[in-house]
Image 1 (cartoon, rainbow, N blue to C red):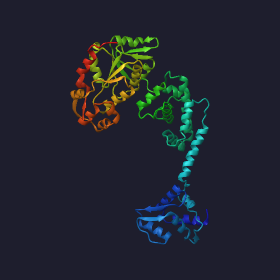
Image 2: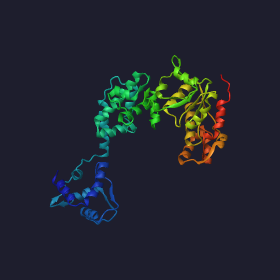
Image 3: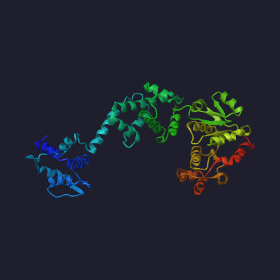
Image 4: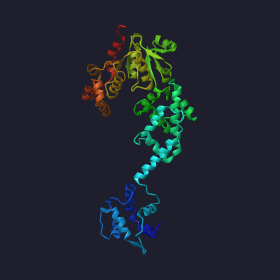
Length: 435
């Protein structure tokens, strides 16, 4: 450090009033790489104004404002303890004053990019799934959320970031070799890392794998746990094989050799059975004896209707609100067999949103059941819709798919299936022509 820089540093340290001013000057150096722009302290103290008068030789009062380049120039015209500051390097002085090297925005960005390129070059890509390599190339886009996750980890734990990304590439290969037969997430984790929790949803590796699978499927990143589990199931990964369930009565559930013997007994006895993803993964198909199946979202409504199950002409399914992975899997199997789906839900934001999602997922196969304006009038309650429910009903897609949604929104009252149970039971028990 030059004599002028050392004297300048002592000068700043001798007067605490410079600390906040220099902090703002340092920000300019970090943003622009040098003395550029203006520093403004709107709440400057008298001491800060006096400190700046000592540099500029003129009077200041709040708001304190000065040109950074002029500040540097005036400093070099000063002297401290008899030492001229003419050769002072302000950047060097600021680094010594704060004990931290100044990096410009451009330098920090380049350093981050260099770290990421080093990460990519350190990966073992031997026998890596082509789709995973394609996703890896997309990570060069710094705007992607998974790239930002990696950047954050790279700053604090470069080896941890590299290990997580390597695990994801190994998972892609393991998923390919498994051929969609079904593998539990813990086992997949153990296969690629020896740690059964390495790919859990809360880990960096788990989040990166979710992003990779979504990219490979041509979908956006899942917004919730249910969507993530459905994405995993698409690739044969069972992240939760027992707690996700769907209840039904009357369906023909098939394995390659024919109807599954255990489920056949329950069907013939008209018993309610609850299916998990593990059960459904073992099935090759599902169908209805009549070519149609009825769906309700409400568990109490399902139970009430099933008190008369011996009179049902067609199977009944309970989705238990927002569709789970198990419910989606069962409905997908039914859709593949050409089964007609009849859905009934509550007349509120969530019930009609679920109906809209089903209409979009099963176009031409899903029909609304007891969801007309007349049905709404019959079961309309005195319960006001919540703000969240009203916002859901303002969604353009919901309004387009579900005609009654506008009426429900305008009236502002919820309608519940319990109010039309008799009509629903009549639909399930009145004989129909079976193709």
